[in-house]
Length: 118
Picture 1 (cartoon, rainbow, N blue to C red):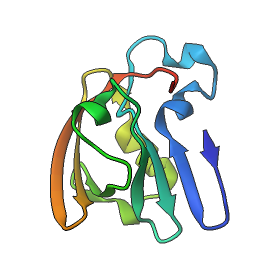
Picture 2: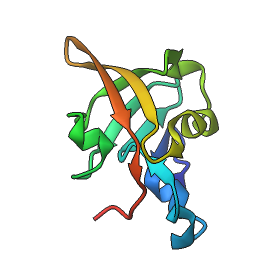
Picture 3: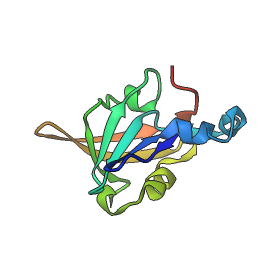
Picture 4: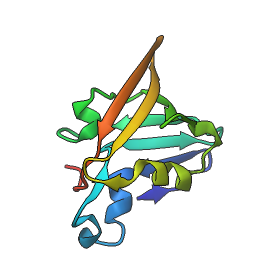
């Protein structure tokens, strides 16, 4: 699901896979299992972390700011590029560097099967 408000781009990663129908999630498509929001200045934030998916398993929290995905600065990425670097097959790894308050957090997420958010 992509929503384009004036100053914020909201990305529901699993929802993107579901946009073409439930069949789009069949097979080996994976997700980090988080709803992200990208501001006009390119900053990327975790908005929601549904239970039992990769992001929750690695301790991501709503409000975390994602700085790097696989070593790439997210501020230079379009929403399409963010989606492309976060998609893959179930079991693939994605490395995130994020900020939580005053702390830098590094996490490696193994993509989980894409399912509908509860």
